[in-house]
Every structure is written in C-alpha cells, then in structure tokens.
Length: 95
Image (cartoon, rainbow, N blue to C red):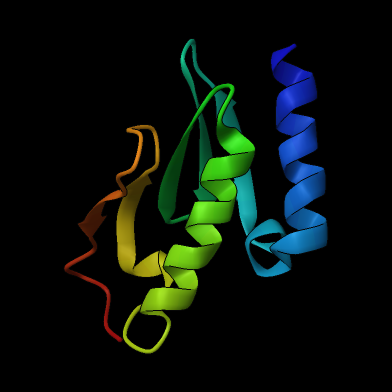
C-alpha cells in the first residue's frame, strides 16, 4: 500500500508540479510519513494518507514565496501537521 501511494504522488507531481518532480533526489518511507529530498538539500515531509493534498498545498506555498525564496531556501518543510506548514530556513543559503 505504501508503495502505491508514493507512486501515485510521483505520478501526480510529474503531471501537475513538474519542477518539484524533476528535483526529487531521494524518497524515504517511514512508519507514519514520507520524506522526499529535494535538490539534495531540502527534506520535505508528507503524512501518509494525505500526501496528494499536502503536495497541492506545497505547490501553493512555493507559488506564494517564489518572489523571495525557493524550496531549497529551507532545510526542511514539514507538511505533516494538518493546516500548517512548518519550515526551517537554511541560513547558509545565499539568495
């Protein structure tokens, strides 16, 4: 079941969020979440059973911050808490 869900997430991101899809460098499946490594720098966490919705929210988040930051401006982006996005900025990232 876990593999089917993450495969659906990958397919969805390829069709609807291609910049994210092209830059996924690793996927780790944990007991309660998925961890995707974006551009070898940023860890993005998604809850199991809510991943597609959280991926849509991530796309909206990226669009919102695009004039000032990119996804790789963060060390991690945690989408696992409902109705929240928790981020830790990468202080070493020069913009």
